[in-house]
Length: 248
Image 1: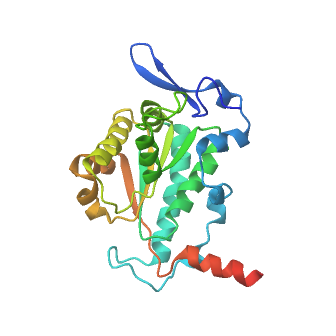
Image 2 (image 1 turned 180 degrees about the vertical axis):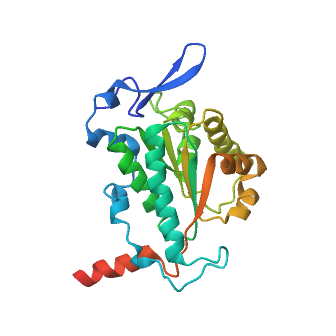
């Protein structure tokens, strides 16, 4: 049954002179299963954890030309940053976030979702959104034929702005219009001003993000997130698919 207060978004927007968001009572009283449901994690990442992060996919002899470090060394650094972030946010919820950059299939989303799973177990309300999916959902609110009880653009944006931890996945090298840039900016800028952490994964190189998102958004992202690069000489997803196939 959909919660009548939050519409299953997990937070309630208050406005008593200063807009704020608080966890809905359905989340406060919910089980771990419901916290995971509110987090919107992809099904294949619900059980991932930092303890099960497998470094065997990261070559020690393949050197990343951007950093001069091996895939293995970069993975170790990013993995430690993920562990440190979990400890930090549990002590101080308003803290700096993380920006994981790297090619497709390098483990960025796995790390981000592992962080989410760890924090959900501590009762921290977390929201995972795939960037293009969120933008599509916002566009759908403009449909004149949509049902009045469907989630509004305001609700979608405010949930992303105010949830305690936002995971902004796959900020890819798309053709961003001014409309999409403005929506992303409104989320990032609000979270920066309120010191609310965000974890971003992107396949865009750090020095090329401005080209896609513009200077305003990029500047704020780099102010609120510590960047970590991940790279591989293989596509981990493709390798794991082959490993699964060999078992059958």
